[in-house]
Length: 275
Ligand SMILES: [Zn+2]
Image (cartoon, rainbow, N blue to C red; front, side, top):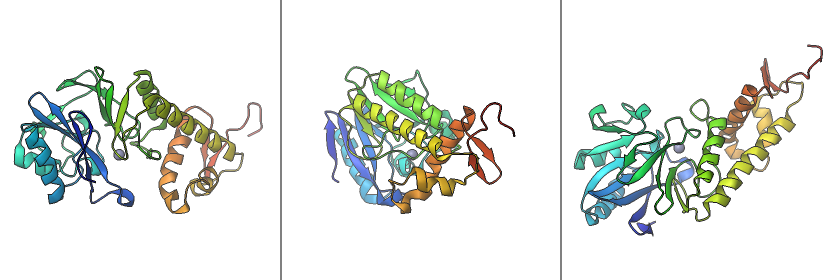
C-alpha cells in the first residue's frame, strides 16, 4: 500500500513489523501539526518504510514528534530509528517510559487523559492494553484509536494487560463522544463509528453470553471451551481466541458469574445448592 491521504492533513502508511501477526501491516499515520508532522505508530524499522515516512514528513516541514498509542511492538518498532535521525519527543502513556528500545526516558513526553498534543486531546482507553491512549480532535470528529478498534475483524484482549470490562467501558465511552471518523491501527478507516462501536459492544456481549452458556457444574479447561465458544473462528486462530476467552472468564469471575476450579472453569453453584 502506498501512502494514502485519508482526510486532508492525515496520511496513512502501512508498516510491516517483524512481529506482525499473520503478516498483517500496522497503520502508521502522519498528521500535519503546527510545527511539522506528528508520526503516530511507526510500526516498522524497515528502510523502505522509514524512507516513506520521512518523505511525507518532509512535505509537512519536518517532524514535530512521535506518538505511540500502546506498547505492542508492531506499533513502535520504527520509533528508535526515526528518533535517532530526527530527535524530538516521543509521546506515550507514562507506563511505556523505559519500555521502547532505544528511547531514553528523557525523550518521552508522558501523556494521559486531559493532555493536549498539537491540537489533539489525549484519551486514556484501557482494555486492549493498560497503556493505551487515543487521540481525539473534537473540531472535526477524527479519532486515532490504535488497537481499540480494528478496521476489519476484532481485537484480541489478552490478560493480564488486556481486560474485558475495561475494554467494554472504553468502547462505550468512545461511542458516547460521537466521533465522525475512526482511524484504526489495522485495516481501513471506519466511517460510521457509532454503528461500528455499537456492533463491537454487541459482539462482545454475545460472546460473553456464549461463554456463560458453555459453562455448567463440571470444570472445563479453556482449550475445551474455545472450541464451543469460538466455533465460528478458524481452528488455527484458537490459540489467539483463547486469550480473549480468558478475558471474558476473568470478567465473569469478578462479577461472580463464573468460578475457577481445579481442572477449569465452571458456573458458580446456585444459591442454596449443596457444595
Ligand atoms: Zn495491540
